[in-house]
Length: 316
Length: 300
Image (cartoon, rainbow over all chains, first blue to last red; front, side):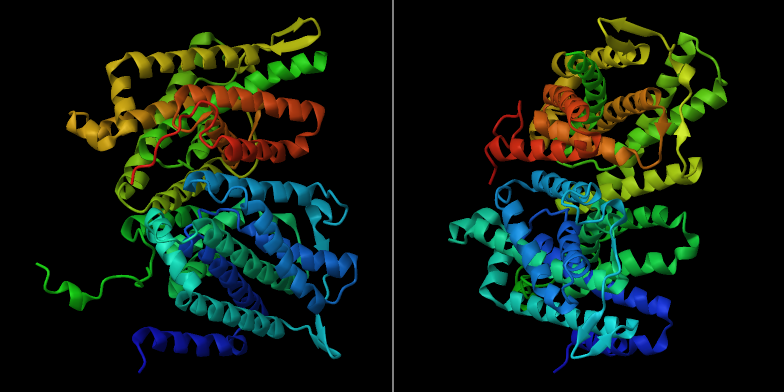
């Protein structure tokens, strides 16, 4: 039996699958970036929406993945395929090292500490500490994906690679919901103290979520650097982090359709209204305020965990 | 040694500005448990409003003390009104909503103010008039102290002492402290919480406005997006001193200013923020409640 939600999902899937055939290259690039940003938004959602860790520095892990691919490819001559594994692993290791000492902090302190990590990351990139990051200009001339002599050069290939990455991410997210890990995070998010007294290790699960989210963002970063064949610091600054943070909350945290809607509103709509360049962010800020006032839990909030209505009927 | 003393003077100047902005953050946080992300943009707005008030209404080249005081008062009043509107429109409807919804609303409000400034005054850097304060310079044993610096230090100290006595010695101040401790209990005692929150936003925004004008007078160049960085530094200062704690915000601001000046003087200004945040994270790891903050048992 198909529910209404899965019908919408199927229609959307078919539309996204054939999307490259209807549009020109500029819109195809927007589509690819939409897919990549959705992946990052889902990874932010694992940390912020599911584990409830106030994290506003996610562009750091997105950027780490992108820069890992860029540096290994351009400076050391690795093929792109070989850089995929390190561009996932390095953000995960960094997430463990950075979040380890601060994961116990209360919400707002974490918010500022994670913003701090992001700002430090940008200064390291801009000041070109190890002579590898190319300073404020970044790194140009990243290779394309090559496999068995086939060159995946066109934008259409990029689109489908991002599509597959989003598919993998959605698969992970679905399994998360049904696993012990997902349930534990849900309870932590609902009530930390109650969860702790049930024997759920808050520190373990929050770190787990942080590291998993960082890894997925790293994979998306690698894809992003190949799509634009260049990386530069401003693509990974705090403004970007705030965008990912807002996507999750405007869309609806811990909700799969919510995060997709959030990404669409926060990334694709500004592209549509590009001609109103100067005024669009003003309208945007107003829209953020209005959305939160009218729908404080996001546009498409998650239903999981609510008491089914047939149980509530008799209570008067 | 000269560099050291000079950096202390510079550091105290920047520190007073951070402290003024940090007071706005810490008072709002103390009462509403909300990081007012739009506060930094109010500071930037103040610099632009002040510039317009000065050049349009009083005409350029007027240096009389009365005119300068009038510019400060007028600008502070305008920013206070904007601050109250901000609370009414963006924060009050979300007082019972999940905490992060209010954070998004604050981020949105910051975006609105920042882009409104860009649309009104343009995206390019504007130069603050130099004659707003006399360009007198004192040299004391190799250290240069400008008139502007003396003004910043003096006025900030005066405002902070006034605020300290207002919070600790007046009826309204007592009400503010009561609301910060427990809003519901304060309501039962007959305190109008909405009015207290309005007062908080008036004071916080006016102090931020003074800081914004001083930033214009001291650094001269003002840009529409400068509020974010001042805001972030000031918020870090508020956390260092103990968020919600008013003397803590003053101390945190001064210490952060000194720390920043030492990093700029001895290492490099390119690394200023990195060191600021390393310091913040070290403080958070070893003393999460800040220097003057008290440990509060969490309510279940």
